[in-house]
Image 1 (cartoon, rainbow, N blue to C red):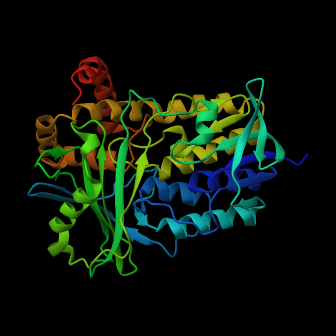
Image 2 (cartoon, one colour; image 1 turned 90 degrees about the vertical axis):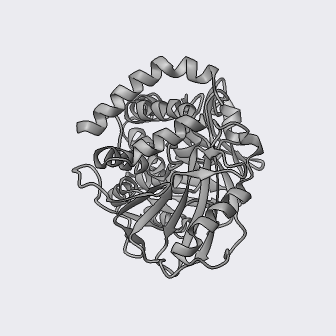
Image 3 (cartoon, helix red, strand yellow; image 1 turned 180 degrees about the vertical axis):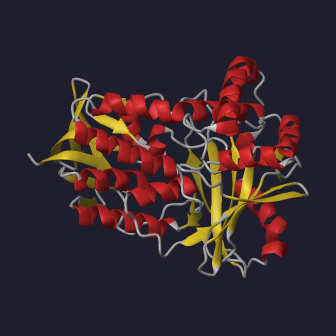
Length: 403
């Protein structure tokens, strides 16, 4: 029976980060993906400064990416254009890198580091006495000391392991396309925080224009499940409405491809067990307030692999503990906050506050840029701590009166 030190299921950024780290550390690594080599993944394509920092830690060449200096936030008629903050933890710039190119580049780096890539192959965990001992691919069983689940939004593999979304927690849906625009080389991501559905109801989510620097922009919208009548929300109609809103200012052409939608998991019931860990989207590591998860995917992938290199026997439990310390408070606060803004009148009032003053807008920038977590110093970190405590008290009422 073939065997590896580490097997990764999923060749996206999270899986590639795990494979790169483990292979460079001397482990034997295999990566399995159901798709063909060079497959595309629907996404906004934006990289936060946090994601750029993670890529730099992996020694990834960012020379071909389009550099982003900051974020332009729009709430009604209020527009604030902010530069990414200068910090000692993260890069001072972001980027836009279409996922077809990003994913291909990362997995090529993993292959060059020594990882074996197997495409168009569905790998499922082999479970013996509640311990994952490897994977099965067709009629072939392959052993591994640890299996990393990097399958994106939870599916068959996640269900087998209990790594599924908590049905009581919110999730998101998003849709995007590409269009030509003379502003393709704009240096700011743009986020419109005041979206409305066809009935004029405020939608908890945002519309984005992400300039790719190649003649095109990524245009899309996303919404949270906490709004009333969410199941009736038509994403194509919402995207059309947003397109009409930005048509003149961005001078955008027709869609270059059919708009494609995807689900954003924002919770998970279980992210580790004997012989396995879940990383990235598969672990519910998505910011509920912006739908971003590439940076968390990269970080969790590197963390899982490094802990495995340090000690394969305890890697799964130490991973769960350290991911919890790094992300859980912020993500929990974000999920609770999403129930709050599911109420239209609270959403409208909150958005005016979010960009109303420079100091509050800076904190909003940190939230939208995934720059705030349990290690964040200063005002932003204090706001997170206070918000977490206040929303913990309000959470039962928010859930009971959910829209």
